[in-house]
Length: 81
Image 1 (cartoon, rainbow, N blue to C red):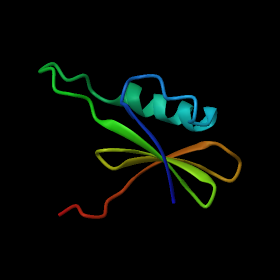
Image 2: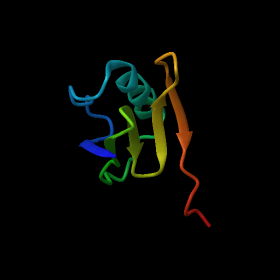
Image 3: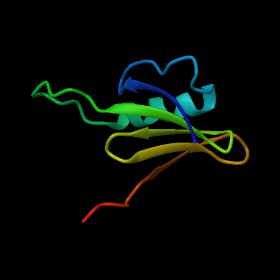
């Protein structure tokens, strides 16, 4: 696994994020509720596994690309009680 970069949810993804993956990240960001209490937003982490990009939000939301290069959103349920 290769670590890519981190950025705050709601910000424009860095240039290192492939455009199709960035599109999926933007869709997730747009669906997140706005925090009226002013809490810090979660952060995304870009990693590369076997040459494929993966963006994971601190909450466990994961955006990957399918074989055709389209974004796929899932959730890492490991560790949840």
